[in-house]
Amino acid sequence: MKTRFYALFATLALTISGAHADDVIVDQIDKTFVIDGTEVESLTVSAGDSVSFRNSDPFFHNIFSLSATQIFDLGSYPSGESRSVSFDKPGLVEVECAIHPDMYMTIEVE
Amino acid sequence: MRLNNRALSGSECTRPSVWALLFVLSVMNLSVPALAGRADYQRPDIQPPPANNQTTEARVALGRVLFFDPRLSGSNWISCATCHNPAVGWADGLATGIGHNMTTLSRASPTVLNTAYNKFQFWDGRVRSLEAQALGPIVSDTEMHQDMDELIEELKAIEGYRPLFDAAYPGEGISASVISRALAAYERTLLTTDAPFDLWVKGDDSALSDAAKRGFALFEGKARCSVCHHGFNFQDDGFHNIGLPSHGEQDPGRYAVRPIRAVMGAFKTPTLRELARTAPYMHNGAYNTLREVIEHYNSGGEPVEGLSPMMQPLGLSTQEIDDLVVFLDSLNSINPLTETIPVLPQ
Ligand SMILES: [Cu+2]
Image 1 (cartoon, protein in one colour):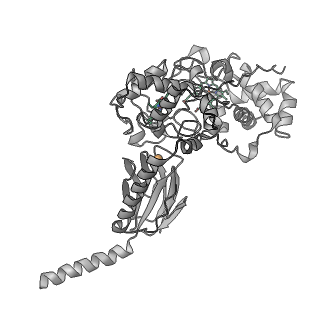
Image 2 (tube, each protein chain N blue to C red; image 1 turned 90 degrees about the vertical axis):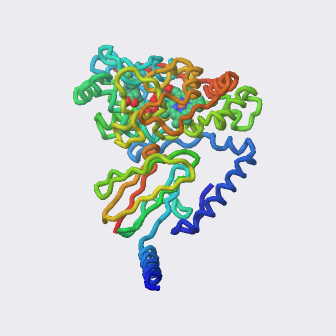
Image 3 (tube, rainbow over the protein chains, first blue to last red; image 1 turned 180 degrees about the vertical axis):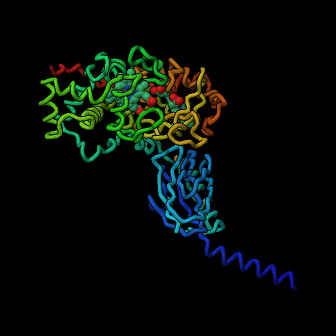
């Protein structure tokens, strides 16, 4: 009984924190960044949120950032695949595709 | 096709819609009529010129003279047209360029035709605009080996240039910025003209032979060329390492501009128009014929560091390679853009 209670508590805690840390899906379509069907050049998230970059083009993309705020390289991945990155530190993050560098957006982490 | 996915969070709810989308896409792919594909190959607008360099006749005229004037170089022997020669597809017919004092350059001279459509200039895309590009070769030690201040004094001393500069950029005098803008304005007019493929895109079914049509189907299908070479100019403003055989020192290519693993040894996807006039091919002139190029792709490329995951052995037959060559031949302008060498101002 006691263990069950703890398990329930843990699940609840996870659900609550999950509700706070958002995961925003950013699509790659026609070599542009798209959220919710609209092409975007910038996005604001809260520290702790994550962003999933979903490749909806028929070729590979390679999303990365070399910004002082956060450096990451999601590697090359094919059509249909998503890779996500969580943003923990407030600041401006410039995001680019290494293969198609005209794909560029900024993420403001608050 | 645009996604309109309202489910922004939680993978559980998005996954079914992704599958649904993939299903719809695969069904659509099977049923897309041949003509729908042709729309992707219509001539687009060029990249917009910067605000301070809207194209005018006077600017193009000045840029044309500068492009052919060897006095732009330190030796007074080399003009832009030495390496971007209208008689050789606006390239130079060499594996890699030859510059000041007969220095052999490390990269091939690309054609300047259709550079107005490109979002990036140079094999490694280190600059975006034609304006920014134009100053590079003039002051490069190995190309035109010129001192910019000296060049400006030299041009000021040539009487005949003054009215051209005044008409093109009134009140701006002669400066590096004005020289680069005039060259860029001229280059924006250097475009390929209709090739048999373009007539077919416009609806003339007889413009392509059966072999060329089969080649195009392979290009977009089994040979997967269009994954990188797509749209009117057959390029993607992208950078890929296609696993060329390398002799000697490895050129880091795009990696020198953006140190990301995936672009080690990657170069800009070049246009596939006017190939009949621009051999040898590739950034290092590795291949002399289109058949060699296609055999390279058929092998999947050398397993070098940075090799694009989009490079895979293709299993093309000899007949299929022939068809691809015939298709590439249909991308040559029927009446290529010609140019007469202008009278140089004195
Ligand atoms: Cu990309």
